[in-house]
Amino acid sequence: MKYLFIVQGEGRGHLTQAIALSRILRRHGHEVVEVLVGKSSNREIPSFFMDKIGARVRTFASPNFCHGKDYKKVKLAKSILFNITVKKLREYRESVHLIHRRIEKASPDVVINFYEILAGLVNLCFREHVPFVCLAHQFLLKHPDYRYGNGTGREEMLLRFNNTLCSFGATKTLALSFYPLKDFYRERVAVVPPLLREEVLGISPNDEGYILGYMLNPGYMDEVKCWHKSNPDVKVHLFWDKKGAPPVLKVNENLIFHWINDVEFLRYMQGCSGYVTTAGFESVCEAMYLGKLIMMIPIHVEQEINAADAAGTGAGIVNDTFDITCLIHYLPQYSTDTVGFRMWVQSAEELFIRLDHASVK
Image 1 (cartoon, one colour):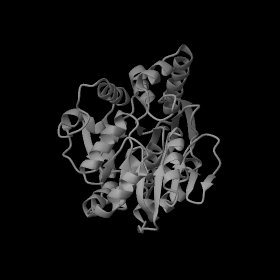
Image 2 (image 1 turned 180 degrees about the horizontal axis):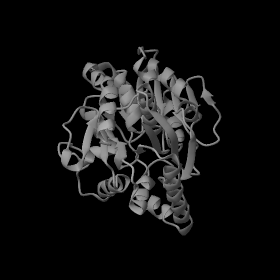
Image 3 (image 1 turned 60 degrees about the vertical axis):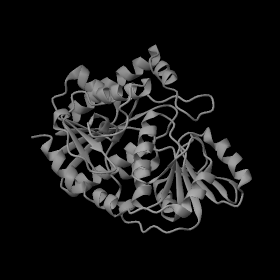
């Protein structure tokens, strides 16, 4: 069968999920004919994605989050206003038409949407006659047994509305989850394991005595530097995707910033004592699989839900700043059994192949 991927390019989670699924599909004789990635002027598509996805990649303009003046927390109202200007709406209209043309040209048997909102708008505008499978952790919000994100606050309601737009016209929604739940047939939701790359599955973790961090928003850089002045003996490696940053920015011997690189990131994940992150689903799963204590600093409602969910499994703690002391103090008492989670993750290939085939019957 032929698959076409549409991927939200914000962060690295959806990108690495696409890499993992493309490899699973190819191992079972299928083909990924093209990959369309939504991007903004503030982000660059990491080179590792281009190198490893194994298909032609096209990019298109897509909505993205905006941050406050400190470049830390996401501001939803600002994001909405930024993305509905006349110029932006024209760009997104062109993107919708581009996606439609590429679907017609490639004639895939299945389209997989990795949480790109414009893919849902394509279905809304053109009623594509090809099965759409939508895949993201956020679709767990549709499940009646999911304990998080069910409030009536503005941000949670906007997130659920975004889910509806992303999955408009979907044949099936695949909800990535830290743990198994029964499928929810009424909403066509299948609960599936995290999609971790085979490089992660083959790692044997150890502890080399440093803290690893993934910092999507560069505004936290000053906060980290300030903390490190009071804790100069703690070795910290931080990965980010700041546009124009050098491959390695060495503040001093014990504080080093790295441009995001999947091979290097996993190498440092393997040997870290603990992991600090803004609570993106994918890297939290990687740390959980390797049994690393996680401190999560969510920057918007989606990550707040991720953080509460992961903390509820015993994987780590939640904080509102990059005060790594909290993580260090928790390390001596941290103990978790990763066997169940690892078995759940390792069942992904069989479940994804079965579900993807079933979705087009």
